Structure formats: C-alpha cells, structure tokens
Image 1 (cartoon, rainbow, N blue to C red):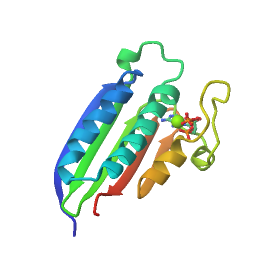
Image 2 (cartoon, protein in one colour):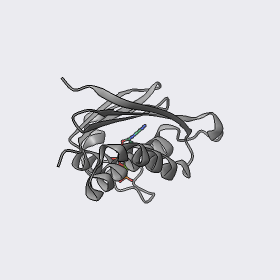
Image 3 (tube, protein in one colour):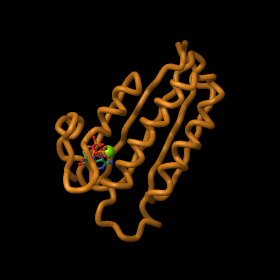
Image 4 (cartoon, rainbow, N blue to C red):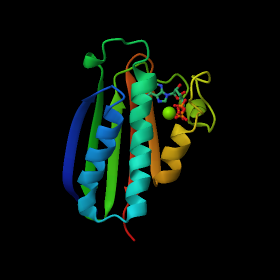
Length: 147
Ligand SMILES: Nc1ncnc2c1ncn2[C@@H]1O[C@H](COP(=O)(O)OP(=O)(O)OP(=O)(O)O)[C@@H](O)[C@H]1O
Ligand SMILES: [Mg+2]
C-alpha cells in the first residue's frame, strides 16, 4: 500500500498571472520525488492546462477576480507517485465526455483549440474530471515519477 509522504494545498485567485505561479509551486514541491526533466516538464504542462481552464472558462463573465479562486492540492507518495487536484467553484461543465474530446471547445473564436484535456491526459497517467453545473469543476491528475 502506498503511503502519502507530503502534501500541499494552495489557493490562488483566478487571474492569468497565476498560471505561472501554479506551475512553479507545483514543480518546486514535486522536485523532492526526483523526477526527470521530462517528467517534470510534462507535469508542468498538465498543471498549466488545468489552471488555465479555471481562469478562462470557470469564471467567465466574472469581472471581480479577487473573489474567484483556484484550489490546488498536491500529494506525494512513497512509491514515487504524485497526485494533483485542481478545483474551482465556477460555472461547471454540462457534458464532461464532450468537453474531454480533442478539439472540443466552447471558445472557438479566441485562441483556444480544445486541446487542454487531451494534453492533461497524455502528459499524466490518469485524469479524472468531476463537475456540476453552477457549482464547479475538479480535475484529478496522477503521475508516476518512477524511472
Ligand atoms: N474548469 C472549467 N470550468 C468550466 N468549463 C471548463 C473547465 N475546463 C474546461 N471547460 C470546458 O471544456 C472545454 C474543453 O477544455 P479544453 O481545455 O480541452 O479546451 P479549451 O480550453 O477550450 O482550449 P485549449 O485548452 O486548447 O486552449 C472548454 O472549452 C470549456 O467549455
Ligand atoms: Mg483549456
């Protein structure tokens, strides 16, 4: 049975500058598991996509971002596994299956290309998405740093 060896919880406001903040704190925290450069780069990409989705989609239409939060929980395990949960209390996703499909986007006019979930999926070992319309979304990613 794997045992948790370290845990971090971070709450950030949903503003674009915090995409970099989230990526950085998660990778600094994960470094104690001794990931390869590539494993860490993959994790950083996946975290970026999840956090960007909170900033771009979850709180769309909210002008006062100082009251919109992204909740990040990171857990490290003694078997070299990391789990990263990224949650928001935003608008939620009506059809998760559709949203996860590559190239699906509700924002086709901007620079979005509908690849966020596909990137999270390919750069981690498992991806779970839970969401309730009007309540928010939680994305849970797991990755093994074993070599
Ligand atoms: N946290 C969230 N809250 C509400 N809706 C979301 C959230 N995350 C994703 N979605 C919905 O799922 C769709 C697909 O997300 P995905 O990240 O795959 O693509 P995208 O964000 O539209 O484009 P890209 O990530 O390539 O810039 C989004 O267009 C949006 O409608
Ligand atoms: Mg996205």
